[in-house]
Image: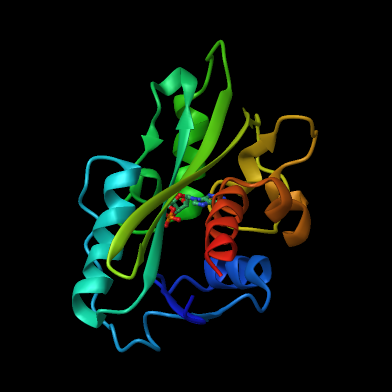
Length: 194
Ligand code: IMP
């Protein structure tokens, strides 16, 4: 295994989370460090499709080993919404506060508040494509709590807990989160190839 791999993101929250998970197993290179300044298109209809679209873009430009992740919050009572549209649920931008307000409004009176986060990682290694998935089940709280994490974290209470992701330390969240689990599968795969 080569020890440098491009992670197709410039999101500082994700880079910090993932670097903590990876330790020194290999060196993560960000998009900026790889010379990619353009916004990578994310126009697929599914979470898997978006992860693959991003990884393929980076591979075509750099020819280097790389991976990309895509995540959605899928809410049972909303037929899986916001899902692949999680980032732009309420507005065109990544307005976390507006997304959370809209989610609470759309769930008013709902019989179920069950939801899960799902992350798919697309890895391109030596030109071959691999997919890894991680999921965490939980429920959407009645109101926001906590100020850690990002996105829907203040509203998401994972099963087995009575606090939101935003009330947990980064280590606690990483240990059970969708992205933590997907990254764990990616890491296991990479380690088994060494
Ligand atoms: P992305 O594919 O990782 O960029 O995630 C898409 C959107 O899902 C983000 O803009 C957030 O709104 C939401 N999201 C992704 N991961 C998390 C998380 O760990 N906690 C809360 N929200 C998240």
